Image (cartoon, rainbow, N blue to C red; front, side, top):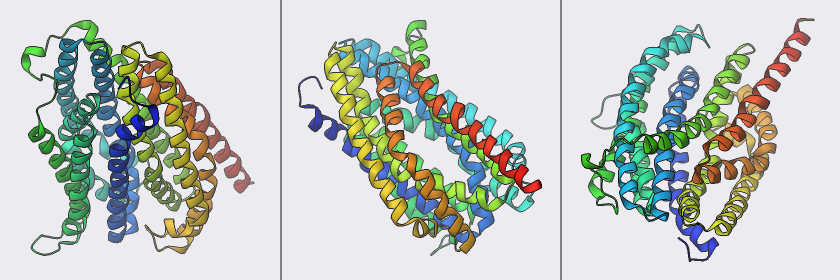
Length: 410
């Protein structure tokens, strides 16, 4: 990690996770594609559940990023025992987080859905999906923590295989369980949730089987020293908020858009599925550089850290340029993957062209937040994300809504 040329090193660490994230993106698309085949109400329900689902991912991934950064730093500083303790504590705390998320999110969903719609069918579909999907929160939390632990020690291929296995299983099971192919019963939207949970469980099982790691995971390592636990949360909490802010944004936009039409809520949901094809591969690069940044920072290689950052920024910007080109060349076809409604396709295509204009610029914030997390600087990373999602987008969206709505009522 300290000696190899930067570009080959970044590519070696990142490409396995970029491939994993591309398959994860495909899973998101396929999952929504088959749910959309049930009905547009089912797709609306999935769009409304998405922010809470993303919040669960944000908490589990965010804390695991803290575990990743702390392990990488201590390995770079040649402090093996502290790295062992960070990994062991991280797994236990992740399991606790999963239990809390399962109970809290299932309990909150009825009231949450009624904030956006009075349609009882949409609410029913949303609850049927979320009650099953959220029951796997412990599995998600442990799987995410293992993923970041393997990445922290440089075993990117193991992480790739586990993520790919879960996503591929999900993709295969989606039509089987939703539509009842072969001997399987037709479960509808519950089948989509169950397919997701089974895929996540498969990933966790593989992590447990693949061991050993170059770290010791045991109860003997659970010395809950305040400094170490505090460091996990000092990085994990800002990382969680970084990942949760998009959920706040989507919820705020859903409230605004539902004032016009449920069609716009569907369009926003489709967009967030499509954009995973860009931001998840970009996140794969971030996952690759995060342990590199932490290790080299811990080893005092500050100039090397700077070069790792600029290399990742260039790679992420390239992904965003490609995404912008696709959104301008094929907007209608992309929207048409999820709906046959001509009005939805037309409105969605126009929205996609406008939104895509910000892709390349966003590469700066994506690369910067990832590098700062690798440096254990969760606070500055959070400030960048908050400026992007909360300080700018939500107020401007609300202002435009008020201007358009007042124009309609004049």
